[in-house]
Figure 1 (cartoon, rainbow, N blue to C red):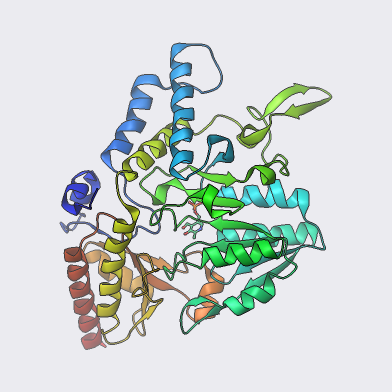
Figure 2: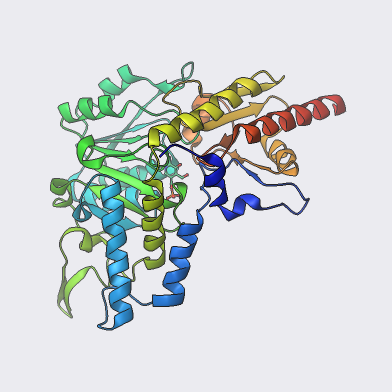
Length: 411
Ligand SMILES: Cc1ncc(COP(=O)(O)O)c(C=O)c1O
């Protein structure tokens, strides 16, 4: 189905929102979290108003309905990602998914002779769990630098760093630079060195169809809320042989087979890693989101978003004092435009943009090592998704020009 952006916008009630100052919302903070279409809101609300019950517990009608909706969502989501329900573990998001690899797989399999490769452009969610692992188990961490002229990974350094590594953890698409890493090449090199690969697809999944089985990646972490789904849910996709090497992460109800005062035995497969009451409403909402997203051609979505981002980056880089970090004109860049003014603090600039109705993200974006490599403390970031329009981008550029001009004359 081709993108009818005006029709798509009608499915997102929040896009009609006026801010307290009367300005119509222009939502450019999609890399932080996307808005939700009405069908996702309805699916969650139907669960709470029609069949709210715990899942995998009782034998009554509502419990059966909740269980089949939870498992139905798992089927829709795993099939959307090109794999089977058995390979998918529900988590609270990409952060928990990565922690699950660190605590459930790496702690069981790695020790002080092992090397984990990260990149300088990782989100903190894909750095801190490995630093903790390194403290506890003596694992060595190697960071692959970025080339700050092209804003891409230094692949020569990657080849060297991945020699002798046991695990390579890479972000699919940088949340700051918007650039997609050369995943296929990374997987090829890593596997030829005998390393497993963990891909952080928090930013990749909203812009590109991820085919887990075809990708040959060992672990994929995803968050629902950046791809039209609710907050509080995501998943880890795990290759079968890797799942067989995993031990329990969080323990308690649901993940056990038996418990006695002498000890416990655990479920097998994904059930071993889903502890306590599941996130039922969230899973149902995410199932509705992937079914909604499935109607679109993701390459059209990508071209639409990439077109807005590259135009915006080109225009704002011509404004006095603004530097763009990243290269949104690249065809593999997906919709994040990070920028900084040389004398307006990023926090102040965000407030001045908000006055015009524009929601952008400001700060280090949970990527402090990348900020260090770029030599900046923070950036402003406009990030686009399926419902954004060129008209919004034009009004954004105009407002930014106005803000910078007003500021320069007050200096
Ligand atoms: C690249 C990347 N990885 C991981 C995360 C963490 O996702 P979540 O907070 O949904 O767990 C984010 C969130 O911004 C991200 O952009």
